[in-house]
Image 1 (cartoon, helix red, strand yellow):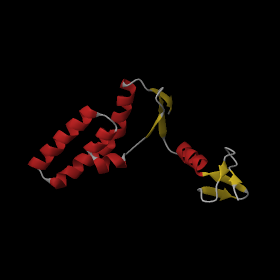
Image 2: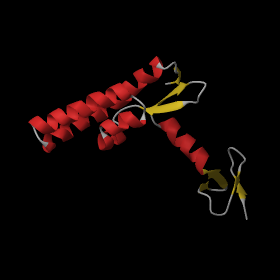
Image 3: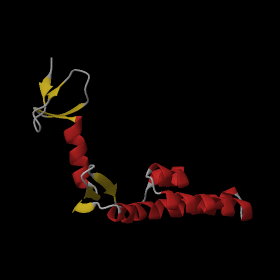
Image 4: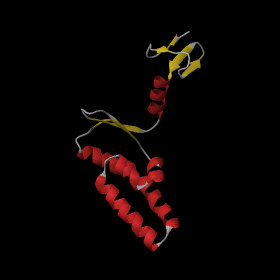
Length: 126
């Protein structure tokens, strides 16, 4: 038995994620949109597609360090952070590397926004 989302009118399958509030049922896509509205998100638009950037600390950049920049195709920043990682390990050791990667986590979203603006993306929603 399938139900229909009360917002987008999409049919929700039996095994699909949904949220039920009273008699209204919403699909997982509408729930994600609702969550994004509550958080601080900047949306940059481009003919290739929109990109969402959350304001604040980037935990993925903290965990991945320079590899996060490679994933985002920011090769200059990736090269710089690989170099800084090698220097910090050589001079100070692994413990101080954590400080560098926390710093990367704080600056990653800001650098990514500048990168997108240089690539021709336009701020759609702040």
